[in-house]
Image 1 (cartoon, rainbow, N blue to C red):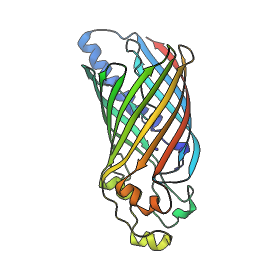
Image 2 (cartoon, rainbow, N blue to C red):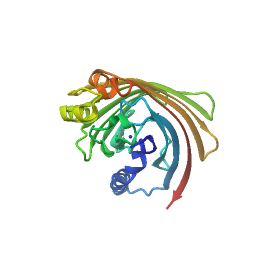
Image 3 (cartoon, rainbow, N blue to C red):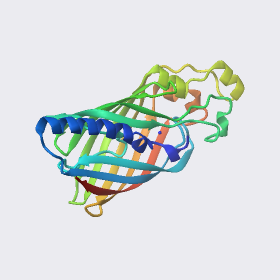
Length: 276
């Protein structure tokens, strides 16, 4: 989610993983129903974001994040939040949707902040898992959880919870707002927030610290999406997270950084239809 220039670029990096699963699911559905798809709607674009350079940082950086989405032509476009990772719905019933999800985790190095000297470098990583979401009020209120495991690097497991409210102001403008909560296991917390005695001695600014898993942060996300035309869409968004517990108590956050994590972004997307 490395500088912010690579943040959450897993929306595109994970696209191959999602498309493969999607294609297999679609082929099976075709065999069962003996129906032929009319085609696909592919949406590509990108966002420019400014936010923390790494988890717990008090310094921000600016970067570009590509985005990708694909759906069948006979599927309506769902509302989504700006911090949703790339996913594909495999099962859907009574407002409940389930499927695979892939994302991206930010790294950390002295190029982000020279005060990190002596602390271990954290490599960026792709993570993957599953999402589950439910619309208690159709097209208005959405509850969602993503659980993702790092595919390498020992960065552990994350579970992100979101509750969003969507308000169509006009046919073109949609506003959204919602709460956020994030839980991480010990492996994730150790990688991003622990400091060993050797690292403490090498850095000279921070004390040794052993971070445990648990509730990592609480926050909010707001967005305004404007459909410029049938194929072009623009969005502005803001997300704030407050690091808690060991994520906030870690000297990486409390001494070198800040528990207040804010992101602001602007995105532009275009949709294409591909028929068969």
